[in-house]
Every structure is written in C-alpha cells, then in structure tokens.
Amino acid sequence: MDKTLRVGIAGLGHVGADVFRLLHEHADLLSDRTHRRIVVTAVSARDKTKDRGIDLSSVTWHDDPAAMAGDDNVDLIVELMGGAEGAAFDLVKKALEAGKSVVTANKALVALRAPDLLSILENGKGAIAYEAAVAGGVPVIKGLREGLTGNEVRAVYGILNGTCNYILSEMTATGRDFEDVLKEAQAKGYAEADPSFDVDGIDTGHKTAILAGIAFGCVPDFKSVSIEGIRGITPLDIQFADELGFRIKLLGIARQTEDGIAQSVEPCLVPKNTPVANVEGPLNAVYVDGDYVEKVLFVGAGAGGRPTASAVVADIVDMACDQYLPLMGTYKPAKLKPADMGARIGSYYLRLNVLDKPGVIADVSAILRDNRVSLETVLQRGRDPGQPVQVILTTHESTENAIKAVTQQIAALDAAVEPPHVMRIEGF
Ligand code: NAP
Ligand code: HSE
Image (cartoon, rainbow, N blue to C red; front, top):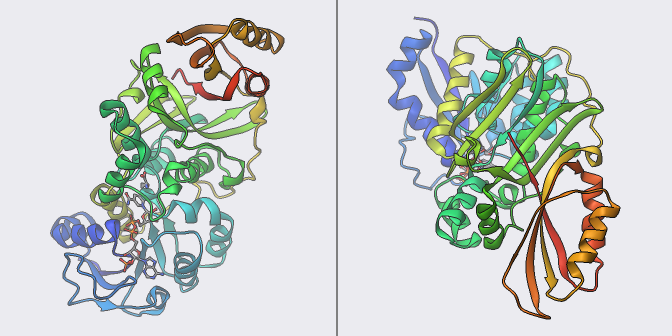
C-alpha cells in the first residue's frame, strides 16, 4: 500500500459535509481502488460550534482556511467554500504555490479566475481538478475532457442549473409560485449561497463558460456569455408553452459558428417530445456534439450535497493516483473569439400584452413584415374589448437582431400594455 493521502477540506456546508461523510463511509472501497488510504486530517469553516452531523474530533480545525496550505499534515486541498474572490482564491493560490494540488466544486472560481489559475499553475507544481463545478454529480468534465477528446466539438449545451430546473419543473407540475419553490430548493441544498446566482442565470453562465473553454480549447470568457435568468417566466408562459407543445427550460449553450463562439444562457421553449424537455427536478442534462461521435447526452443529479460529493471524490481519487490533465484540457488554451449574438438564427416565442381593439394585429403584422420575420402561430385567449389581452406569436427562423427590432417596435405601439416577453425555441 502506498503512502496515505492526507486531505484538508475547506468548507463544511452542503457539499463539504457530504464529502467528509463519503470519504469516511467508503474508506475501504477507495483504498482498494487507489491503493492508498485517503484520510481527512484538517478542516475549516466559519463557525466551529455548528453541529454538522459529522465527527470532527480527530481532525485539526483551522479558523483561517488559507492556513491549510501551510499545514505539513495536509497533502491535498479540497476547496468547498465558493466564490471567485476572498477566502477561496486565497487558499487555492497559496496551496498551488506551496506545490499542493487542489480539488474544487467552485465554478465561479474556474470561470472567472482561469487566467490567474493558469499563470499560477505554470509556475507551481500542483494541479487543479473541478469535476463537481459543472452538472454536480454528472461526470461531464471527464466526459468532455477525456472521453470525447478525439473530437472537434461543434456545440455543448443543456440544463446546467438544478435549482432553476427544479423551480421550472415544480411550477409546471403544480402551478406553485416562484418564491415558494425557490425556498424549497434552498432547503434541499441545491441553491448557491446567494440564490440570485441561480435564478438570474449567472451560475449557468459560469458553467457554460467552463464547458466552452474545454470544448473549444479556450480560456473561459464569462463576459461574452449573453445571460438571462428565469425571474420573468410567468405561469401564463408555462401554460401557453404547454398548449403549443413545449416545456420551458433554462439552457446554457456554447456553439462554434463561422464567426466565433456563441455563448448564451436563457429560458427556451423545448419540444415536449425531446429528452431534455423531460429532464425534471434538480437533474441536469448536457449534450456534447462532436464531429466523430455526433451527439452524446449526459443526464443526472446536477445539485445537492451527495451527488456533488460523488464528483468531488472522483477528483480526489484521480489526485491519489497522480492522474490529472491541464486546466482546460489543452496545453495552450487560446483567447476565445466571441460570435456576434445578433446574427444568431432561431425561432422565437413572443407573448404580447396588448389592448383588445381593431387594428392591433394588423400593426403587429406590419412590424413583422417590415423586419422580414415570418409567423408560424398566432394564439389569442379570451376576448375583452378595450382591455389588455395576451397574444402569443411563434416565428419561423430569423436573426436575433430582427427579433429585437420587432420587440422594440411592438413595445412602442399605443396598444402595447408592456414590452413583449420573448423566448427562443430550441429544436434539439
Ligand atoms: P454552503 O452550504 O454555503 O457551504 C459553504 C461552506 O463554506 C460553509 O461550511 C461555510 O462555513 C464555509 N465558508 C464560507 N466562507 C468561508 C470562509 N471565509 N472561511 C471558512 N469557511 C467558509 O455551500 P455548498 O452548497 O456546500 O457549496 C460549496 C461549493 O460547491 C460552492 O463553490 C458551490 O458553488 C459548489 N457546488 C455546490 C453544489 C450544490 O448542490 N450545493 C453543487 C455543485 C457545486 P459555515 O458552515 O461555518 O458557515
Ligand atoms: N446551485 C447550483 C445548481 C449547484 O442549482 O445547479 C450545482 O452547481
């Protein structure tokens, strides 16, 4: 049996406590698989007095997580605090500079600080692994960076946030309201410390930037991800989407185009008969489209302590066996060239709230005609002369710029009660 691997865990929240439990419960199994004992020797969190349901009596407690980088009784750092700045970055930097490798579940750190991490890695001896940072327990980083490495990737896309998928699924199934379901997702340990990261699409943006980085051999470029979250989705949208044969899903999409890499996060209408439409609750689903393999779909638990601990421990096992790859899967990650998002082609759903009076649909049709946008469906529910009514339009393929122009011009009509609510329709 080789030398014991001594692990320091910083962060004992939903994920950290379950990583601690897993390493303890599966100690023998992991020892058989790595030919080493993997033992937690040190931990850090903010509140030493909190009962976390784990026995910390035999480990060293560090009030300052960064102190673990200098602890001679720790070989590997597991960072599970979160955040791209402050304690998490400080610890990771110090650990790598001290020649210790790092395992993290922190997507914000990888998406936003990749340039810093790459430069620290260039000069240090450690490595970083981050399987749990995208799609929780689903081994999509390994799938993309190892299993599909022979392919030129055309696109990577899917449901990347368990909290949002849980909220949209519950709202669809039960008609419950947004705030109520969000509280439940927080209690179940799916949501980020600040849940606006989830519902405003930022967490999906971080994951999309990471996947794009690996898929296209680039440094993640979060700033060029176009982001919209799910706060604007109403029960009416869910109901109309259902009538038209769709479900609403928050999708992260990174696609190679002739003009560069198009990266977006937005709620989309997805046909009900596609696999992604039927991925419910906190599950995630990620498609990778490669030139030799074609489409591969990864599905599984995208959030929650136990599934995420499973991914974190997979990285710890790799480190125990001295197996690691360059941060973005390539030795020379390039600068990402963003595509012009306005030139993107797609079909769209528009929900108009307009006054029910003669000539309004004629005005709307003229706007569509003038912008060369072709209609597929028009749906009006109810009739209330002179009062606001909801009118739903779906379009054939057109550019995003044309749809933006249509939206602005409809919003400026006297009969418009509010600006149209627009969503892309993704075919898969
Ligand atoms: P969490 O429940 O909020 O736990 C965070 C932990 O970090 C807590 O134990 C907290 O201490 C500790 N901490 C925070 N700031 C600290 C500081 N300055 N010094 C020392 N300790 C500090 O978060 P989580 O859900 O476990 O998520 C942890 C990481 O995993 C994040 O990067 C998150 O994005 C990622 N992740 C989470 C999931 C998920 O489903 N939850 C899935 C994939 C990835 P106290 O307990 O004392 O407050
Ligand atoms: N808050 C994240 C989610 C955790 O809901 O997907 C997993 O990354």
